[in-house]
Image 1 (tube, helix red, strand yellow):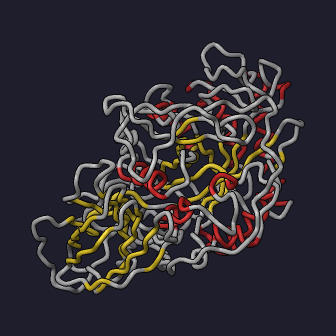
Image 2: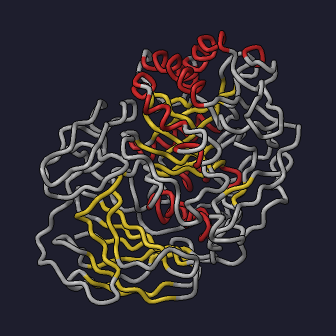
Image 3: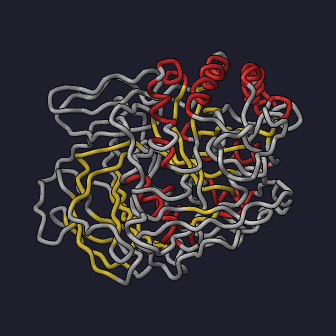
Length: 557
């Protein structure tokens, strides 16, 4: 985290491959570097500008989220009942030829299943642990309708070919002084709000004790569980060990942003003490009224060296620390997994600093880590409409755990989520902090509802489904990403249209196509507005897309 990171899509060149975010300015005010894209069209590439760095004052201002009414929206799609099958890995697709694996979807406090591809010659390997969760079966839903036939120009959605399971969508309430009832309803309620299910809270250890960063984390945690039950996952991340445990004797970093040849690191002889301090946080949070945690992060942005609370780790140091922290978290009741490594730049997860491959290559660290996570700042060779893909040997769920778009409109945030799921192989996506997502709960910006186009209708346990026939991703064509609930056949097709108004036609393959589809539309002025139901005939339907809009088409067999 840089106190206020702002995402900028800067039009430079396709070859540079523009990605997502730049840092914030002094205090909590966005920096002046990096220009936000105007209108709704997302530029096609370009290196991302970085804004001004935070001032030396360190923490954000004390201004909290304002209270007020909650924007209206469409009804939430139903959640998936408990599944009987194993989790799918983050890489391969599922086809319906093999039997369902025996591994259950992990519960909130269980380790991540190892997943795997269901091939034509057999089943998926069982999960490595965890009790049954709320997700659906890994076997596609089978309907009783006669399959239709796609026509020329149709975009084909195939609910029979599945990719990664969805863990949810969320945000961080780090340093937030309070959380109003209106804010809680807007963020966490899937019926009257947008139904987020992932909450990131911060661990403050400057004093030598591990305490909560800000005061909103307790109320938000309670609200997340109240509205979402076991689908809610709350996890905590540290920014810095106490100064006495660091080689620079300072909780803050050097401010030059680079972790090369730095003393902003954890002392080797403090690994045990720091791990014990982090392992004490879940009990502290519970004693304050918070729910059980899902995981504890090893470190926020170990590849970034700012002038506020930070700590650098290279891949070897990260693995070594995980091997100290992991056993301590596993010994808790309930036992927890480590979430790692949360680099600032997605390129440093699978390449560059290579935290992910280093974790996977170490058998001990690999067993202690549940979710492998990354932030979405900087630029990568994947470009604006893609993200670095997990390696084939990864068996962990992958989460994007922080980013703030450079504008508050609907297109930029929805494009980021599209890219993260369609090519980055993620299972969970997080916005950065509440005050940038919702400056005022009585008048939320359009980005809140664009996030809701995913979080409200694509519920935990849904799977990403296959799509073919869509145009190559760019800022002027509709970006299409479908999901399905394998328990009841519900489909949710999210379409991000950064260009002009357009006509599209869809074909839903298989025997479980819906009788009708309802569109929910977000623009700069519409807030998940429900449109007129569209009849589906022979698996086909046509629809109009508003300019600069995000639309979720929802239907059930």
